[in-house]
Amino acid sequence: MGKDGKRYLIVFVAPHLKATTSVALFHALAKKQIECIVITEPSDTCVSLGYFDNANRFLDFNYCKAHNIPIIRRYTGGGTVLLHPGQIFYQFIFSKSNKTIPFKIENVYKYFSNIVIEVYKSLGINAFYKPIADIVVNDKKISGQGAGDIENMLVFVGNMLMDFDFDTMANIVSYVKDKDNFKIILKDNITTIKRENINVTKEDVVNAFIDVLRAKFSNLEILSLPKDILDFARDLETELTSYDVITEDTGKEHKIFKIKENYFIDPNTLERVIL
Image 1 (cartoon, one colour):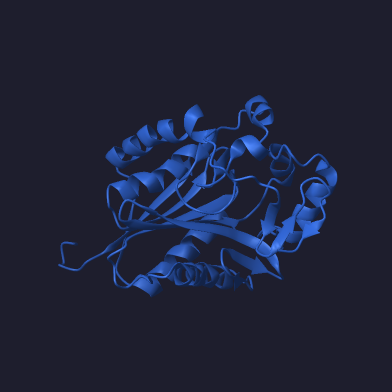
Image 2 (spheres, rainbow, N blue to C red):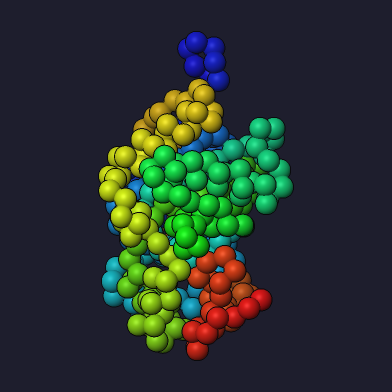
Protein backbone atom coordinates (compact mmCIF):
# COMPACT_ATOMS: atom_id res chain seq x y z
CA MET A 1 0.00 0.00 0.00
CA GLY A 2 1.41 3.37 -1.01
CA LYS A 3 1.41 6.57 1.01
CA ASP A 4 -1.60 7.74 -0.99
CA GLY A 5 -3.63 4.77 0.18
CA LYS A 6 -3.57 3.04 -3.19
CA ARG A 7 -2.41 -0.52 -3.68
CA TYR A 8 0.64 -0.69 -5.93
CA LEU A 9 2.01 -3.62 -7.87
CA ILE A 10 5.77 -3.82 -7.41
CA VAL A 11 8.01 -4.17 -10.44
CA PHE A 12 11.58 -5.07 -9.60
CA VAL A 13 14.04 -4.08 -12.33
CA ALA A 14 17.25 -6.03 -11.79
CA PRO A 15 19.75 -5.59 -14.63
CA HIS A 16 22.93 -7.66 -14.81
CA LEU A 17 21.93 -10.24 -12.21
CA LYS A 18 23.96 -13.44 -12.00
CA ALA A 19 22.05 -16.00 -14.08
CA THR A 20 21.58 -18.63 -11.37
CA THR A 21 20.63 -15.91 -8.89
CA SER A 22 17.93 -14.67 -11.27
CA VAL A 23 16.41 -18.16 -11.37
CA ALA A 24 16.55 -18.49 -7.59
CA LEU A 25 15.00 -15.03 -7.27
CA PHE A 26 11.46 -15.95 -8.27
CA HIS A 27 11.59 -18.86 -5.82
CA ALA A 28 12.60 -16.43 -3.07
CA LEU A 29 9.86 -13.95 -3.91
CA ALA A 30 7.25 -16.71 -4.02
CA LYS A 31 8.36 -18.13 -0.70
CA LYS A 32 8.18 -14.62 0.78
CA GLN A 33 4.68 -14.34 -0.76
CA ILE A 34 5.49 -11.06 -2.51
CA GLU A 35 3.21 -10.28 -5.43
CA CYS A 36 5.40 -8.62 -8.03
CA ILE A 37 6.87 -8.63 -11.49
CA VAL A 38 10.60 -8.92 -12.15
CA ILE A 39 12.43 -7.77 -15.27
CA THR A 40 16.04 -8.87 -15.40
CA GLU A 41 18.95 -9.66 -17.69
CA PRO A 42 21.56 -12.27 -16.72
CA SER A 43 25.14 -11.06 -16.45
CA ASP A 44 26.55 -14.49 -17.30
CA THR A 45 25.50 -17.88 -18.65
CA CYS A 46 23.76 -20.80 -16.95
CA VAL A 47 21.58 -23.80 -17.72
CA SER A 48 18.16 -23.83 -16.06
CA LEU A 49 16.56 -27.26 -15.81
CA GLY A 50 12.79 -27.58 -15.80
CA TYR A 51 11.15 -29.20 -12.80
CA PHE A 52 10.83 -32.62 -14.47
CA ASP A 53 14.07 -32.57 -16.48
CA ASN A 54 16.34 -35.56 -15.95
CA ALA A 55 19.72 -33.98 -16.64
CA ASN A 56 21.60 -37.28 -16.53
CA ARG A 57 19.76 -38.30 -19.69
CA PHE A 58 20.65 -35.42 -21.97
CA LEU A 59 22.89 -32.73 -20.45
CA ASP A 60 26.62 -32.61 -21.19
CA PHE A 61 28.03 -32.00 -17.72
CA ASN A 62 31.61 -32.11 -19.00
CA TYR A 63 30.95 -29.35 -21.53
CA CYS A 64 29.24 -27.21 -18.92
CA LYS A 65 32.12 -27.69 -16.49
CA ALA A 66 34.79 -26.97 -19.13
CA HIS A 67 33.03 -23.74 -20.12
CA ASN A 68 32.18 -22.63 -16.58
CA ILE A 69 28.43 -22.88 -17.16
CA PRO A 70 26.62 -23.51 -13.86
CA ILE A 71 23.42 -25.56 -13.72
CA ILE A 72 20.32 -24.84 -11.66
CA ARG A 73 16.95 -26.56 -11.32
CA ARG A 74 13.81 -24.45 -11.16
CA TYR A 75 10.48 -25.46 -9.70
CA THR A 76 8.42 -24.41 -12.71
CA GLY A 77 7.52 -26.23 -15.90
CA GLY A 78 9.03 -25.98 -19.32
CA GLY A 79 12.17 -27.50 -20.74
CA THR A 80 15.83 -26.73 -20.30
CA VAL A 81 16.68 -23.06 -20.81
CA LEU A 82 20.03 -21.49 -21.66
CA LEU A 83 20.31 -18.12 -19.94
CA HIS A 84 22.92 -15.61 -21.06
CA PRO A 85 23.39 -11.87 -21.63
CA GLY A 86 21.23 -10.59 -24.44
CA GLN A 87 18.01 -12.06 -23.09
CA ILE A 88 15.44 -10.14 -21.08
CA PHE A 89 13.68 -12.35 -18.54
CA TYR A 90 10.33 -11.63 -16.96
CA GLN A 91 8.90 -13.20 -13.83
CA PHE A 92 5.27 -12.78 -12.76
CA ILE A 93 4.62 -13.80 -9.15
CA PHE A 94 1.02 -13.62 -7.95
CA SER A 95 -0.98 -15.11 -5.10
CA LYS A 96 -3.21 -17.97 -6.18
CA SER A 97 -6.00 -16.22 -4.27
CA ASN A 98 -5.71 -13.14 -6.51
CA LYS A 99 -9.05 -13.03 -8.32
CA THR A 100 -7.71 -10.88 -11.16
CA ILE A 101 -5.47 -13.71 -12.38
CA PRO A 102 -6.90 -16.71 -14.29
CA PHE A 103 -7.08 -20.04 -12.49
CA LYS A 104 -6.84 -22.61 -15.30
CA ILE A 105 -3.28 -23.15 -16.45
CA GLU A 106 -4.08 -22.71 -20.17
CA ASN A 107 -5.66 -19.35 -19.36
CA VAL A 108 -2.65 -18.38 -17.24
CA TYR A 109 -0.33 -18.89 -20.21
CA LYS A 110 -2.59 -16.93 -22.54
CA TYR A 111 -3.10 -14.08 -20.04
CA PHE A 112 0.58 -13.41 -19.41
CA SER A 113 1.65 -14.18 -22.98
CA ASN A 114 -0.67 -11.46 -24.25
CA ILE A 115 1.12 -8.94 -22.02
CA VAL A 116 4.48 -9.89 -23.52
CA ILE A 117 3.04 -9.83 -27.03
CA GLU A 118 1.98 -6.22 -26.44
CA VAL A 119 5.60 -5.43 -25.58
CA TYR A 120 6.80 -7.01 -28.81
CA LYS A 121 4.21 -5.15 -30.86
CA SER A 122 5.19 -1.83 -29.27
CA LEU A 123 8.72 -2.55 -30.53
CA GLY A 124 7.46 -3.20 -34.06
CA ILE A 125 7.57 -7.00 -33.85
CA ASN A 126 4.47 -8.85 -35.03
CA ALA A 127 4.44 -11.61 -32.42
CA PHE A 128 1.71 -14.17 -31.75
CA TYR A 129 0.84 -16.63 -29.00
CA LYS A 130 1.33 -20.30 -29.83
CA PRO A 131 -0.24 -22.47 -27.10
CA ILE A 132 0.73 -23.47 -24.69
CA ALA A 133 4.13 -22.02 -23.91
CA ASP A 134 5.54 -20.10 -26.89
CA ILE A 135 5.44 -16.66 -28.42
CA VAL A 136 6.35 -16.77 -32.10
CA VAL A 137 7.24 -14.53 -35.04
CA ASN A 138 6.58 -16.08 -38.45
CA ASP A 139 6.19 -19.42 -36.65
CA LYS A 140 9.66 -19.13 -35.08
CA LYS A 141 9.89 -19.11 -31.30
CA ILE A 142 11.06 -15.79 -29.85
CA SER A 143 9.91 -16.41 -26.25
CA GLY A 144 9.73 -19.62 -24.26
CA GLN A 145 7.74 -19.71 -21.03
CA GLY A 146 6.91 -21.87 -18.04
CA ALA A 147 4.57 -21.76 -15.08
CA GLY A 148 4.24 -23.46 -11.73
CA ASP A 149 3.12 -23.18 -8.14
CA ILE A 150 5.62 -22.35 -5.40
CA GLU A 151 4.07 -22.38 -1.94
CA ASN A 152 0.68 -20.69 -2.52
CA MET A 153 1.98 -18.46 -5.29
CA LEU A 154 1.61 -18.73 -9.05
CA VAL A 155 4.87 -18.15 -10.90
CA PHE A 156 5.05 -17.48 -14.64
CA VAL A 157 8.47 -16.95 -16.19
CA GLY A 158 9.79 -16.40 -19.69
CA ASN A 159 12.35 -14.65 -21.86
CA MET A 160 12.52 -12.16 -24.69
CA LEU A 161 15.33 -13.17 -27.01
CA MET A 162 17.29 -10.14 -28.12
CA ASP A 163 20.02 -12.58 -29.12
CA PHE A 164 20.66 -16.29 -28.65
CA ASP A 165 23.77 -18.46 -28.45
CA PHE A 166 22.87 -21.32 -30.78
CA ASP A 167 26.35 -22.84 -30.57
CA THR A 168 26.28 -23.24 -26.80
CA MET A 169 22.70 -24.53 -26.85
CA ALA A 170 23.71 -27.26 -29.29
CA ASN A 171 26.77 -28.19 -27.27
CA ILE A 172 25.11 -28.56 -23.86
CA VAL A 173 22.83 -31.31 -25.20
CA SER A 174 24.86 -34.50 -24.94
CA TYR A 175 22.65 -37.00 -26.75
CA VAL A 176 22.55 -35.04 -30.01
CA LYS A 177 25.78 -35.95 -31.77
CA ASP A 178 25.30 -34.10 -35.07
CA LYS A 179 25.86 -30.61 -33.69
CA ASP A 180 26.03 -28.82 -37.05
CA ASN A 181 22.65 -30.00 -38.28
CA PHE A 182 21.19 -29.55 -34.82
CA LYS A 183 22.21 -25.88 -34.94
CA ILE A 184 20.56 -25.54 -38.35
CA ILE A 185 17.30 -26.92 -36.92
CA LEU A 186 17.51 -24.55 -33.95
CA LYS A 187 18.11 -21.54 -36.22
CA ASP A 188 15.25 -22.58 -38.51
CA ASN A 189 12.82 -22.62 -35.60
CA ILE A 190 14.03 -19.95 -33.17
CA THR A 191 14.38 -16.26 -33.90
CA THR A 192 15.55 -13.21 -31.96
CA ILE A 193 14.94 -9.49 -31.97
CA LYS A 194 18.36 -9.12 -33.61
CA ARG A 195 17.50 -11.64 -36.34
CA GLU A 196 14.25 -9.76 -37.01
CA ASN A 197 16.40 -6.67 -37.78
CA ILE A 198 14.77 -4.59 -35.06
CA ASN A 199 17.25 -2.02 -33.80
CA VAL A 200 16.45 -1.58 -30.12
CA THR A 201 18.55 -1.47 -26.97
CA LYS A 202 18.01 -3.45 -23.79
CA GLU A 203 16.82 -0.24 -22.17
CA ASP A 204 14.25 0.17 -24.95
CA VAL A 205 12.88 -3.31 -24.25
CA VAL A 206 12.71 -2.77 -20.49
CA ASN A 207 11.03 0.63 -20.90
CA ALA A 208 8.52 -0.81 -23.38
CA PHE A 209 7.76 -3.60 -20.92
CA ILE A 210 7.12 -1.10 -18.11
CA ASP A 211 4.88 1.00 -20.37
CA VAL A 212 2.74 -2.05 -21.19
CA LEU A 213 2.57 -3.01 -17.50
CA ARG A 214 1.43 0.50 -16.58
CA ALA A 215 -1.39 0.27 -19.10
CA LYS A 216 -2.38 -3.17 -17.81
CA PHE A 217 -2.07 -2.75 -14.05
CA SER A 218 -2.27 1.05 -13.58
CA ASN A 219 -0.58 1.54 -10.20
CA LEU A 220 3.01 0.37 -10.45
CA GLU A 221 5.95 0.94 -8.15
CA ILE A 222 9.33 0.47 -9.85
CA LEU A 223 11.93 -0.65 -7.32
CA SER A 224 15.39 -2.13 -7.03
CA LEU A 225 15.74 -5.47 -5.29
CA PRO A 226 15.93 -5.23 -1.48
CA LYS A 227 19.08 -6.73 0.04
CA ASP A 228 17.16 -9.21 2.20
CA ILE A 229 15.38 -10.66 -0.85
CA LEU A 230 18.63 -10.90 -2.78
CA ASP A 231 20.33 -12.60 0.17
CA PHE A 232 17.47 -15.10 0.45
CA ALA A 233 17.66 -15.79 -3.28
CA ARG A 234 21.37 -16.52 -2.95
CA ASP A 235 20.67 -18.95 -0.12
CA LEU A 236 18.15 -20.77 -2.32
CA GLU A 237 20.59 -20.62 -5.22
CA THR A 238 23.01 -22.75 -3.21
CA GLU A 239 20.32 -25.40 -2.78
CA LEU A 240 19.02 -25.31 -6.36
CA THR A 241 22.52 -25.64 -7.84
CA SER A 242 23.56 -28.48 -5.53
CA TYR A 243 24.68 -31.78 -7.06
CA ASP A 244 21.79 -33.75 -5.56
CA VAL A 245 19.17 -31.35 -6.91
CA ILE A 246 20.49 -31.02 -10.46
CA THR A 247 21.19 -34.76 -10.85
CA GLU A 248 17.90 -35.91 -9.36
CA ASP A 249 16.42 -38.84 -11.27
CA THR A 250 12.97 -37.50 -12.11
CA GLY A 251 12.07 -40.55 -14.18
CA LYS A 252 11.75 -38.57 -17.39
CA GLU A 253 13.34 -40.50 -20.26
CA HIS A 254 13.90 -37.67 -22.79
CA LYS A 255 13.38 -39.87 -25.84
CA ILE A 256 12.59 -36.78 -27.91
CA PHE A 257 13.83 -33.18 -27.85
CA LYS A 258 11.41 -30.27 -28.00
CA ILE A 259 12.50 -27.41 -30.26
CA LYS A 260 9.29 -25.37 -29.97
CA GLU A 261 5.56 -25.97 -29.56
CA ASN A 262 4.45 -28.93 -31.72
CA TYR A 263 7.97 -29.51 -33.03
CA PHE A 264 9.93 -32.43 -31.59
CA ILE A 265 12.93 -34.27 -32.97
CA ASP A 266 14.57 -37.64 -32.46
CA PRO A 267 17.94 -36.76 -30.87
CA ASN A 268 19.68 -39.57 -32.74
CA THR A 269 18.38 -38.98 -36.27
CA LEU A 270 17.26 -35.32 -35.91
CA GLU A 271 14.10 -36.29 -37.76
CA ARG A 272 10.86 -34.64 -36.73
CA VAL A 273 8.65 -36.72 -34.45
CA ILE A 274 4.89 -36.25 -34.70
CA LEU A 275 3.13 -36.79 -31.38
